[in-house]
Image (cartoon, rainbow, N blue to C red):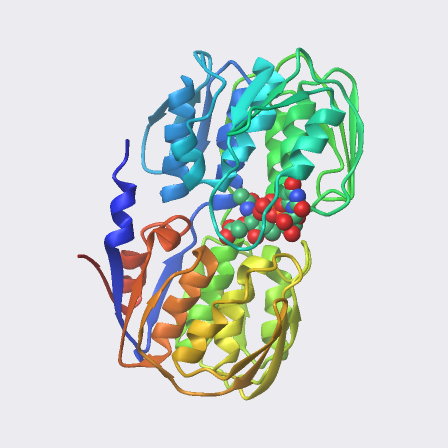
Length: 426
Ligand code: EPU
């Protein structure tokens, strides 16, 4: 059992107002790594994964998979060899599920390869209701039987079969789960109104190198022809587009020239378009972004599934707009609980009015002041770090487990840029 619960006691102390300089390299995408590990279950042969971010969510996933009987060894930094040949259990450990919403990603591969999975309702970020109805419905369409045991659910299927599935709502993890399950199902599966995120394209490309037959990933209709088995595989996780966007905002909010390297700017085109409209000075290369001190003015955003403005960059962008001249309307359409952190920004000096749980208006610029605050979730958490950097004085950020869940070694990486941040344990 890990000692991650202790992270509840750890906090960041940040002194704001400093200019930054230098380079920061982007890590592998959390939201792809969290799918590639479960996808390894689809094959009885070993899978080598490279450029895996060293984050708490991945550690919880490894613990969950090892508990099922998987053997996961680390070769070098960020490199893992996964063997699922000896999986001998089909029930996920409830205490670990509680820490990781992505534990649901194990359901599709477990059902497809072993015909059974038992899981409790997953935990993770508290950013709305986050139901799992569409996963359950999709698996049932593919022939799985669901048993409600009260405290948990068991899904069973001797052999999944292809199905025509229309998603009533675009969902990233549902698309990925059904896509993975369908690779080993009997017959053809069609997923309509599928999500189109770059991580889904990468997942499908990877599985195809192992012998899967997936067409249309990156479009709203994905067709999967089931195959009997998948071979061994080797994958390299693509750069994290949310880190890329967050670091771009970091450079702008501190009025600094910094270079963000090892990234793919094409994956954050919508953010870059909006920043350009807001007056940001950026130099964008094939795999880097350089930020320059910029006079920003207010800009509006509406979060939307890819290629729209990503909900995961909504909070960092909102913090940036507190320092921009004029009014910005932020419309969060994906999650209903993802704007409440703006209350904390107001305590730090922002002038943000909540119109309803999905919309806020930011009046900028207002000076921000260091405060003692707690991170409500991953993306709001990193946004409080950004706010602390734009503040006068010292901020203390508690509940940083939520930040370490998704940003690798963030303290030393920020320190290298000149950020005055330290982690303490009390
Ligand atoms: N939804 C349902 N029923 C379901 C599943 C989802 O109604 O069974 C709804 C959700 O409540 C939400 C909408 O569908 O209103 C879209 O949610 P989606 O399922 O796309 O989100 P997700 O798959 O749970 C992934 C990322 C999130 C990211 C969203 C949107 C992973 C592990 N998580 O979540 O990442 O915000 O897509 O892009 O891929 C994060 O990294 O901080 C994070 C929360």
